[in-house]
Amino acid sequence: MMENVAKKKPRQRRQFTADFKAASVDLCLRGDRSVPDVCEGFDLTKSAVRLWLAQSDDSHQPENLERDERAELAGLRRESRRLREGIEILKRGTAFFAWGTQ
Image (cartoon, rainbow, N blue to C red; front, top):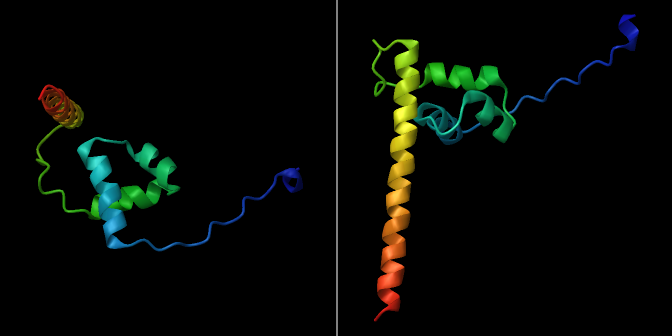
């Protein structure tokens, strides 16, 4: 019965630069993407990304927050970033149309 199950090929060990790890952690901490999204996008294992998160210096994150408060904070940061991007788009559009009227 066990011989019918195909064995998964072991993954070759890869090394990543500190900058790559920091960028991956930053994506997770800012709330841009979840850990599974980062793993899927960069072909990483969840355990590797979670280890990098644990090793990261997240001193900007208050330690006394509950899980739901952390989720709310991440959502608010996401919304804030989206609104800032929207403002930037409006500024560019205004500059474009102002330039066209001259």
